Image (cartoon, one colour):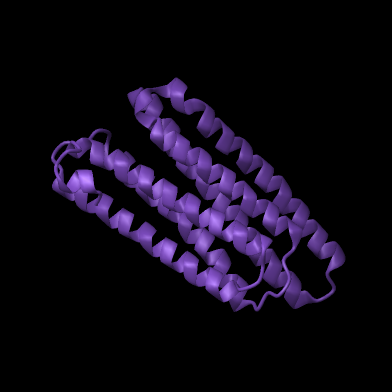
Length: 210
């Protein structure tokens, strides 16, 4: 809970959007940490620890939002939409964290370039989600460009992932390595898909309330 909220300066209905904006920013921070880990692959265990802490902070935002929902008689938008936004944002950071977990679980020692490319897409997509959350109350035109961009990034991520898996099967002779990297690519793609899920909820909210 922020300082303004504790002092009662922020109206209760505005607290939802404030918390969601902070949750989106937390997901963006996690995406940046993952990209940094993959680009400068030196200490995967520390990277996993950092992302565990960021993911845990994301859980705290979810709990705060759900507790506020339970305590609020009136909400600025439908309760189901608030629940969906918090849950889908949580999915993003959960999947980002899972990637770091499996880098250590699979004892990965060398990073394939497509993994870095996919991580950078997640960074850009989460940045767009932060911008969309900041403008969600400003009407459909203010937020539209952000959810459109996230949808475009999901298509790019799908293409990169397919190409990465194709190259993996073409070039890698060790079956266990293929299994490990296919799983990591799948998780990275699912994280990008999760950002599109958030964007779709934002679009629905804006269209319904704009």
